[in-house]
Length: 393
Image (spheres, rainbow, N blue to C red):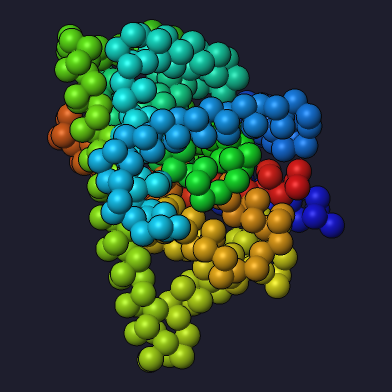
């Protein structure tokens, strides 16, 4: 029965994307089917095979070591602030982002990361039926982040047509930055985080190919990557340390605001309507949870977490999921974990629009106009990833 629901769910997601398509006649179905097959095989490999276990264990151990190194620095600066046996979220989850940001900076400085991003992007372009620019952008978003990626395309930003801008922004919103993957792994099982990274990469292409199909002429598919200004090694270290700290502080501030606001709204709804705002959203999202393969008995609670992610951000939803107040089955935990690993939420519209606008005001206005369509597409990517995992679990 679960296979029937999952297949039906895939069809529903593709249909929802088709309904929002800007040009249904130009949709290329062969690359879409190919990428769905790749998603299924990737999930099967990562979650259900011995080789997948080795890959996941290796990646998890790698990030575990990085977090240990990061905690050395955190302990030196903030040691003694935490009570014995307690682990403040800001110190243990957010501040390690600083160290991972530094590592990304070093890889950028040594030209290792740009070479890797171009290589993977080139291979992806052979599969997804899109241009090299779109393929590079998806990989770069995963490596450097949804706003920083546009800096690397600064040279040609003004020349990118509206349709290609949508795909670039949708890729950025559908993925997550490697710099915060370690933070996710402290709240979710690493195997689901890694699986989601792979699924969302292809899912972004699948949904964008339906919602926003177009042809790219070879003469137009020129990839010009903006090289960062020449810096000394220690100038670069200082910049990436501060960038990582800014991300940690911004996420922390957003969590304070969003969680407090959610608590206040929940209380208000309980006083007025005898139901929390989160429960109400849960009922609205329950049908989506069901087509993702989540049992009816868990659909409302799962829908509440899914809605929380979209209305606030993935960190708030992950804290809710991992808090222990819900009693989900292991399969539901896996589906929800994969769904949560993306930047598909309302705040991301502002982040991406602001990033593009700071580089090119005209293109920033273009992005602002299709902001809700961006969120719609990125949410479909998350749903599709959850459905693919439900086929395997």
